[in-house]
Amino acid sequence: MIKPTLTSLLKINKPLIIAPMFLVSNTKMVIEGMKAGVAGCIPALNYRTLDELRASIIELRSAKVPGGSFGYNLIVNKSNIKYKDQLAVLCEEKVDFIITSLGSPEETIRMAHKVGIKVFCDVTDLAFAKKVETLGADALIAVNNLAGGHRGNHTPEDLIRELDSKTTLPVISAGGVSKKVDLDTMMAYGAVGVSVGSPFIASLESGVSEEYKQACVDYGAKDIVLTEKISGTPCTVINTPYVQKVGTKQSWIESTLSKNKTLKKWVKMIRYLLGSNAVTKAATEVTYKTVWVAGPTIENTTAIRPVADIVDTITK
Ligand SMILES: Cc1cc2nc3c(=O)[nH]c(=O)nc-3n(C[C@H](O)[C@H](O)[C@H](O)COP(=O)(O)O)c2cc1C
Image (cartoon, rainbow, N blue to C red; front, side):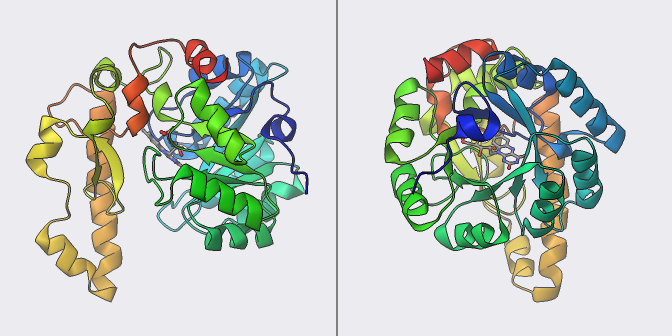
């Protein structure tokens, strides 16, 4: 069975999406990406208000060039209280594509397809891939064990081959790509394109502090650790002296309370609020509380460079 390529799905020149990154992604990065012939995606949660979200879409639409494309990432589970309103704005403004994460994409697929928006769903295993296939997703974002953020458990090869052979959907691989050889390898396993995050944190255009960008240059793959301290769900961060000091495990009290069915939800919510507050501060301000989310591909980040140069390194 011949599956559509990422370039044909999004009408882009090169098979790459600049992946959605909480606090990092912004319109400047996506505009430079579109000019370089790729797609860019921004988490809807990066905007405090719906008006700001709408304004960003209008900005991207007016900057759109042939060969480029833009989309938004929606957290579709209950932790995102703005989800329904964000979905309504994305549909009204007819963005090119939506990437869903955490939770069932059923409603998003139904609403988005009514207005011709493509929906790609984050998956980490075959069971969830089968579910979103039944719901009518247009492609899978296969998040592997080399990804930055909430990574998966499977190697790129195992995940891509399994999802490609056992579903009808095109597979876009997320995780572990920072050079042309990585892109070629994922395509050889059966991916139709890649979604790349970490290498773009240290881009000139990204919205984070110089300290965070420089940390991506100075630290490498061996410095990436998983922490439960941000949301309760393990997330990759740079093992800075601050992370070493506070540790990466939930506290005894949190893990004990998490075992209680009723309290579990609240522990998770409080942990999320505290964790995301720390990440927001570390990403945007100078603080000794350096909780910087990044994946192992920062190994190949050797300087703070324009988005277009990073795209070239991966695609040329
Ligand atoms: C700093 C950072 C923030 C992220 N934020 C989000 C997010 O808000 N939503 C999401 O679906 N994925 C998020 N991700 C995951 C990326 O979209 C993508 O799957 C991942 O970066 C791919 O792996 P790579 O970093 O090796 O390229 C984030 C990743 C990083 C590194």
